[in-house]
Amino acid sequence: MTDSGRVADAGGPAQADGPPHADGPPQGDGLGQADGIGQADGAGWAETPAWAGGPPDPDRPADAPLPTLCATEPTQPLGAGGTTEPTPAAGGGESVISGREVWSFVSAPQLRPMRVAVTTHRSGTAPGQIFVAPYSRSTMVGQTGTLILGDGGEPVWFRPLPSPGLRNADFRVQTWYDPTTGTSQPVLAWWQGPVAETPGGAESCFYVYDSQYRLRQTVTARHGFRADADEFLLTQRGTALFIASRVEPMDLRPYGGPTDGAILNSEVQEVDLSSGELLFSWNVREHVDPAESQVPASDAVHSGGVWDAYQVNSVDEGPDGQLLISARNTWAVYAVDRDGGAVQWRLGGRRSDFTLDAPASFAWQRDARFRSGNRISLVGDGCCDQPGGPPEQPSYGLTLDLDFDNRRATVDRTYHHKPALSSRSQGNLQALPNGNEFVGWGQSPYYSEYAGDGNARGDGQRNLLYDARMPGENVSSRAFRSEWVGTPYYPPSVAVRRDGAQSVVHASWNGSTQTRAWQLLAGPDPESLTVVVEHAMRTGFETTVGTANPGPYFQVRALDQDRAVLSTSAMVRLDG
Image (cartoon, rainbow, N blue to C red):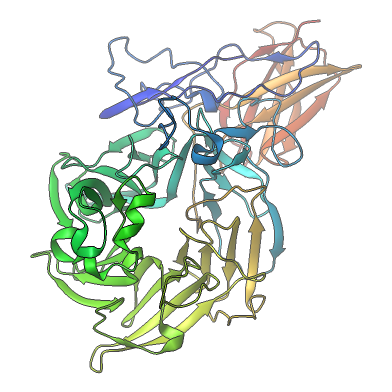
């Protein structure tokens, strides 16, 4: 079996992404597993990560740089008294890695993703896989990390993190644009950092992986800010827009807070992915008076003296370059002119430029997005009764029509869950290509898909096409559905055991979306392998194939829908 591996990027930081602290499933006598791996075509010099099931790539030049990945250790939570590991309550420091709610695989014992329960699956869902980044602030069921799932809840690709005190966020398919060549390609992108978020953030960054699951780029925040988990958006200009935060000292007395207080400031930053140059920044404190906040400055005494007045949590870009920025704690969405940074209009909050009737009003919102036809969408979170404010309400997805002539906002559609969910934070509403809407419920352990017409409060089953629940108290800050083709640069994993007169082979290929069947080879020595099972249909993440051939050498080939060989595993020897 393998030890740890590394992921590297030819152009940037990379670090040992060691295996999670999990023992593999029980392995009886006579279990064989590959000690070394054959290299997939086109692997370059990137090393095989531990989660792929193999050791470092032997073809990587010995002097190739391997800088450090960000956020590979949990941060110290507030009040931890100098400990290096977060407490379970503050940092999600415990995990359950066995049992009926956790997947385990003989051929990939280092992978222990959560099992989700699919409770509704009707016809009419959009094509594609589901993308989540599970974590927990209490006891994690399975491992934290980035997880692609099929409609039935089975894993497609999983990249676990080495500690339940670390998490990923905003995991989704995006498009990488190269403006110099005019080309583009689908990629995976996400944030990585600690579960225990301290004001201003601990070490954190954004990752971009290509379709072969190679680390292509690591992006960090500038100006002394820390990368924020809420947003990372690739643009057609070959840049990345994201949110970053920083604690800044501030006399909070004018707002009812302490003299020696501080405010959590946020910037929207844009970085050129080719040069790394910071091209644009928009500082919320410079453009929005903290008096707009719905959170009393006196609350700073409960958060280490830091007032979270804004909590900027999403940024979107319109076709004319206008930015749409959501600040949860002001209950407002801001349209920003990127040329000068001026706020062109506000929707919601204390200084709204639009009249919102009662159904259109929202609070503690997230994920504000431009939609076609003068519409926007967002998620209204159920949170935090405030004196004089609206009562706490269930979370819901919302699209609004904006009448710019009369400065009036009205409800277009809403998306509610049954049972009603009250997520205090996080969540997203994704428009799907077939007109459906996909909802990640943030701090509630669900994700759902609805026909585009939506539903009403108290009628959450109407137009519900898909619904799934994560185990325990696992959550994902956002959830997405997208079509994805993964062609791993590393080869398939294989393990074999003896069961009476049968040799039982277990085959998997973490992240392959094109494998449809497996071919099994066996023989008395490495030079004499022959095909003993021509075509065994893939039955999920891991496929089990039996043969009367005693081996003791075995190997598998991954086949596509035309029975062409995609890749070949390493050879494994079964002793005994």
